[in-house]
Length: 382
Ligand SMILES: NC(=O)c1ccc[n+]([C@@H]2O[C@H](COP(=O)([O-])OP(=O)(O)OC[C@H]3O[C@@H](n4cnc5c(N)ncnc54)[C@H](O)[C@@H]3O)[C@@H](O)[C@H]2O)c1
Ligand SMILES: O=P(O)(O)OC[C@@H](O)[C@@H](O)[C@H](O)[C@H](O)CO
Image (cartoon, rainbow, N blue to C red; front, side, top):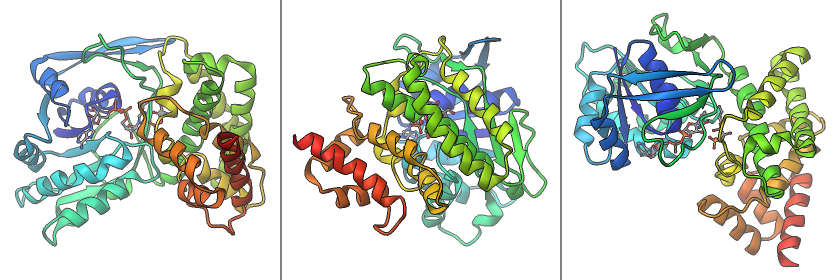
């Protein structure tokens, strides 16, 4: 079997590419970074270092690489003969990779069978987003006969890598890759690292509203007191308390909505807090807190669960405190940080609340969020 994987970055090499390789699948990495693609073309192997208790090294070999910007036709031909297409590029980048995927699907021989397309991004139903983009770029009426689209939830902390790491990737030992089974019509590929599920919604919401809510909270609260590493931030008792309070609120939602038991969810939260505290993982508040516009959007890790809690009349004030910390997250070199701060500096509270969070003025979460936004605007104007 062959897989074309878009995004040869941290999660691409350290997780998706690794699990596909371990399943005996030939991996073709596609990326737009020329130096990275050249390095992958020249290398015979790279090593994934899993750090923490029972850490181990795994050598990945037998891969190929193509530049999806300058070698478009080569990417199209690879997809035409692939069994699987995966992405780990960022949810906002999916629209840019979709045209090449659409062309590759169109170029498949009539008897090639369906290629399985799976977006491995931190977003609710990222594959649906990708499918919509592929559909609008696809020329033809036979997309269903040539491709299937399956949503996934991917979980493994892969920090930014040291400048001298080359292609090697340091990752945590924990991983989970849940994929919805239905679209495969009983013909799922044999990938031992995948957990096949009938209904992905509980998995993706539990992951995004626990791992990523807690992670972002740790990053933004850590940034506020000048801490650089995630493991140091979560070891600070006052930060741990605020993160735990936010996760207690999302736990209430997840237990109410998806029927996880309170004990199950508490065990899940405990495992996650231990993962954040892994001192061997060089993860930073800047990486984890990155892209605050995306993270504060309507269906993402903060406003998504807070809105659903507010709609149910349930407590959400700790999640609003996380949003307040995000409004004070100001590292350099992140264009979303710049846009958020410009908005706060020039807009009024109603306008900023609507633009950042997409909340309607009559939504029950709106007053608390507007108050937090107004406080930050007042602080900037003082
Ligand atoms: N790092 C983690 O811990 C982690 C864990 C789970 C999920 N994710 C998700 O995985 C995705 C990737 O995250 P990452 O940490 O690996 O980021 P990354 O920046 O390390 O990797 C992204 C890669 O995508 C490439 N890329 C950008 N635009 C592209 C395009 N148009 N075509 C092809 N490649 C393109 C970049 O050059 C880069 O190599 C994100 O959606 C993230 O939320 C990350
Ligand atoms: O990738 P983002 O920017 O959506 O979120 C940052 C981190 O929370 C994230 O990358 C986690 O490390 C990952 O989701 C763990 O599975």
